[in-house]
Image (cartoon, rainbow, N blue to C red; front, top):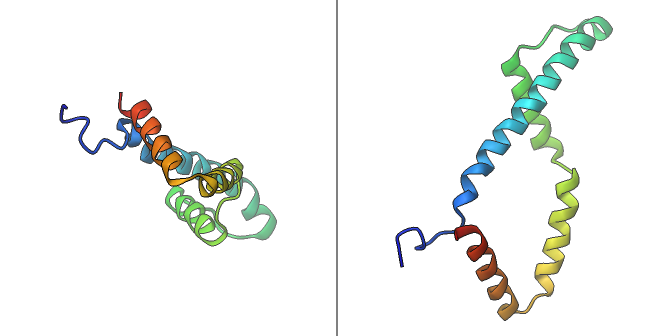
Length: 102
């Protein structure tokens, strides 16, 4: 057994924070441009800086959560997981670990 196999949940896990950062950046850019194009003219409010747009995206996510496509997938798998026997859960864990760590 080599050192990569010990406690290897998935070598691809580093991608998750990168994907989250990219999603936040893209949403922030959209908020930044849409806000600055529309809100100052319509509501006579000040423009946003990019850091303020990032803060606004994070705040809205914390307040309202996300109910995008992933929400339904998570619900489906939570229901599926709850119906599995402990033996089937172990088999699924092993299959996922083998798929990710090989």
